[in-house]
Image (cartoon, rainbow, N blue to C red; front, side):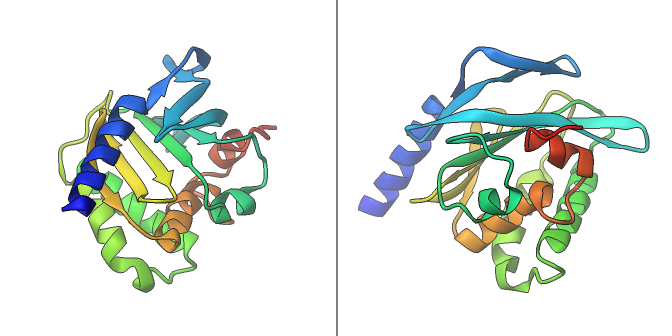
Length: 192
């Protein structure tokens, strides 16, 4: 019972505390907050950019950390609060396309070794089974004590435990084979 109560309180705290402050930057008409509070931790915007494919802008992604860093490996390995915020800016993103692209991202970030975290990946991908539309916002918030909290439009859709999963998830954008090199550079604040 205590575990259930703890998870419920954690979820409530995350929902109420995942708040942004003043906008630091505007990308594709999306105002990106310069900081977030998640689970009692203050996170600063490390960097943000646009994911594009075939000359279409698909989403704006922002990376939030306790302190700014341009070291992708250190960020992936860090067992500390972190968040990635994705603003869907294209009607071209569907549930099937998001699921497929995310699975490809997991394969790339794990060097094609998704098997050890297959159950966690399946649970995560289930979040995309609902319709995805332009204007949706996904928050992927890692809290060391509980795991990755997955939120869609401010509503928690699940919590996925495990550091191996967290590393693979953040690796989708920050690994040696990221979703897009220019987005990785933007998230790391090293845009050229």
